[in-house]
Length: 361
Image (tube, rainbow, N blue to C red; front, side, top):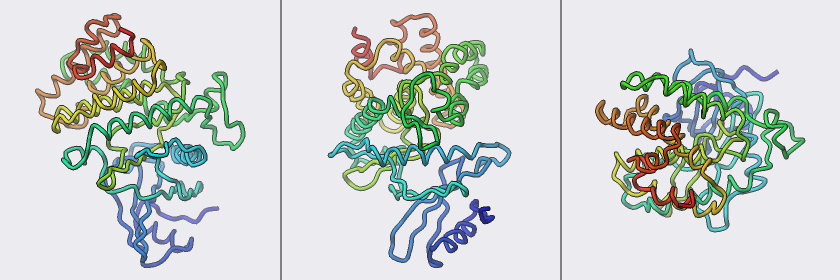
């Protein structure tokens, strides 16, 4: 049986490390920013920094909110796979965070240090080429989606490939309901901002329900600028926080990042992140998308825009109302198969031609 380490505290992690060959003079700092897990930076006497990440059976930010600790098993699984079959092109600035070790009993990951700033925080840095960062991330993500169609997330070391008939056995059962959160609760945001909550229910029934059966490829599951670490003047980019990894549709990874890029461009300086990202993704995928994919992508983006800014503040009440209205307009048009109003939305203003190109228009 594992020793009863309290890995929700720096003192508990220090005890663990000392019992596992660590040094007493390690500098341990609990990091802020995440809500689900307990994350620490550990610096040894030689100045070498590592990240430790522990999953408790509840959220770090709210102990009344229970979470399945198996989420850490799936993060370790995908990082092991990423190490074995790296998605990084020879000259790419992007890579998945490197896994150093995993203690499954303690639900404790040891990861490389990818830097102290994420892309959301670094967006305003004038030294960074935000358009290049967007393009680099898109090319890396498109490669992940193209090359992972046969990869299983089953925790067993056997059966490393899958087909659709084994979807549920080869997926991450923890991630699917968590990822559906915005769809499940969309009706609350719509009602709060004066829209028909039944629209939220219809979108959840039509599109949210698909998350349980989507099986195109591996999806990061929480691909947004807050999970991209930026290091150095040349902007080496590390993709972190893979616990919501799942087999699904690539449209959701793209839609989520597109929504957050839209928000950064709109409220933090209009540096062209959305256009660079979506344009480069479309080019990298080539003919790998169709009208069904584009619809899923824009709906997912619209759900994100209509829901998350009502929970994570970007602007004042009036500005948030405008965001919800934009999202509602796209969702209503999608349900009506009204491409003119989908493409005419202000949400897609900077990427309208890219979307048309993906649609073959």
